Length: 374
Image (cartoon, rainbow, N blue to C red; front, side, top):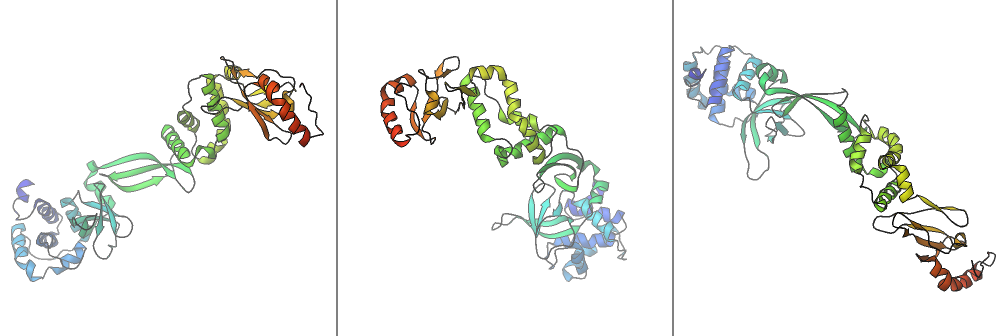
């Protein structure tokens, strides 16, 4: 092959094109194509087949005669477009491109370019003549030639590979399995519908759930309460994203995740040990009145409770929780459930502040009992 290539006064790509064209029986058209491309002349067309119609252009007569002589072609015309275009592909296997949107094409290297002039009437092509532009970010393809994706598989099987992946379907909010056939970095065939690989699907579903906002699936207030409880208890923090990925295993969509997420916080509680957590950081307290009140936990703050002042009648000391017997912050509420006092020292409140609060509450709520010594 090397000996054949060096016979022609052409760049290696064009020599390869011409040798292939001769072998495929389209040597005459191969000579014209090589001459057109070697000349660098703008014939006003961005498609090679339109360009070789200029074979009678005076600027091509001398180089054409020289190429015909070396290639030993008679000048008799045997037209076979596919044979010629396959020959072109043989000379430019690294210039394969696929039309995207508008006049933009994606190259097999992974880069993008723009096609000059009227859009070609084909999706796959070889970008034959391309140049960088100082005033534009993308190179300009001045001439292209049609190819078929099947030719890539037939002629360059070593450059074609299969790849399976998962992709996010935004409209249906689910993970799809995608099987792709790639030529270098260019997708030449794509299909959906297979069952996604479970681990990859779980990773992608969890990622998209975090991007959408975890509160779409899990009660944010309850989650924050749980995380603050384990912080107060001194337990090792839960890796929420890792636990979310575990929950997503075997799931494919937001709808499935939303249903499964009902068990997310109970799952976290079981992981840390619910019995021990309830012992150190209980969810609620029973007051002297017999009512059960929720303990609120917040990051970086002391636990607190809120209930009507009357519910604390008979309680001298502030409730304490946890191994360090931490006093909870008590929000004492009026009958309308608005706060009248906040304290961590109930005994001090009864002694110093209650008499004044009692007088105000008696005036505002005369139908309620406000004993002097509750």
